Image 1 (spheres, one colour):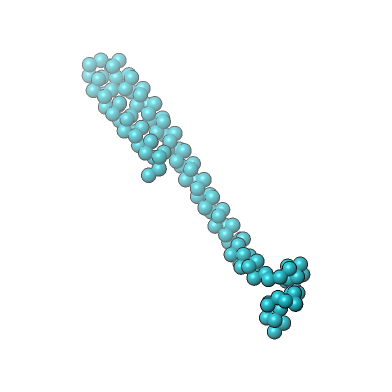
Image 2: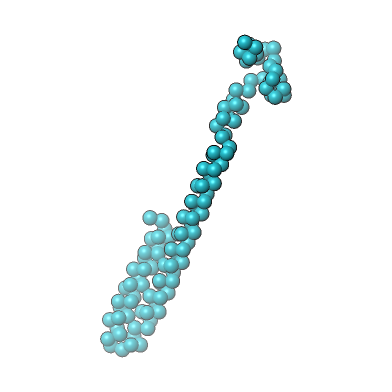
Length: 112
């Protein structure tokens, strides 16, 4: 459970306690219940704002995960890294992979 969900739950519990207290105090006089009702409304508003923040956070996280999956499919970095690791000599780099130095061990493999 995230911090926003815990805070929203605490606000809802506090609002419930205030509402129950307001209902009990209403038996004596209706004006005694007003602070409890107003407080419950404030805490329910706070809980709702935390709930909306949590939903926005989850939606943003889902969008970022989707973008990461799309990037992984479009840009296979593992293959590119493997190709860079196989690069052996300066001549190979500057000739776009067509030629090797005379001392390069890859020259014998590519000539075969």
